[in-house]
Image (cartoon, rainbow, N blue to C red):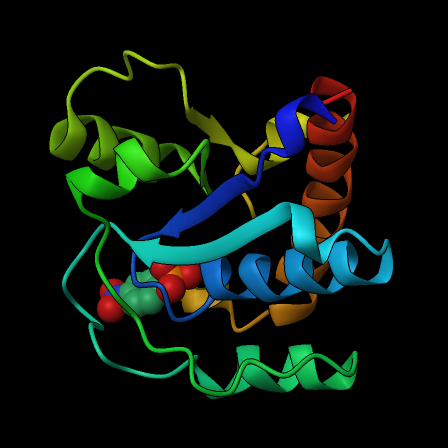
Length: 158
Ligand code: 4NP
């Protein structure tokens, strides 16, 4: 690993109560199981103000719990320009998040912003459970996306 650097990853979605916190806690779990927690800082944030201060949405929390993952204490917060400077990877869940990020942060001059499923062999938006209630589809996407993101980062940090 280059310079013992901590890699900082911020997952982003609209509300920061479903998809991005699922990605945050799945990524933390994958990284921990790989024995790499000390090399990462991982968090999540919203593009909107809709859910600021609210905990992870119960069905998302339930889906994480089914896999032994705890997200207690996480509350939604909105992304800031400081986050853009602080994090190395700003990983959005869908195309509309990308548009919102561009409007909020301006041009991605440092090339930090990406889409989670672009790290996988099936680029797409992460399944949005907000209207479908299908948290399993979100889990499947987030799990695959985070696993492939970790592979990408470890290869890049070699
Ligand atoms: P998330 O889900 O962006 O995955 O956290 C949503 C949360 C809240 C809303 C939409 C999506 N909302 O419209 O309030």
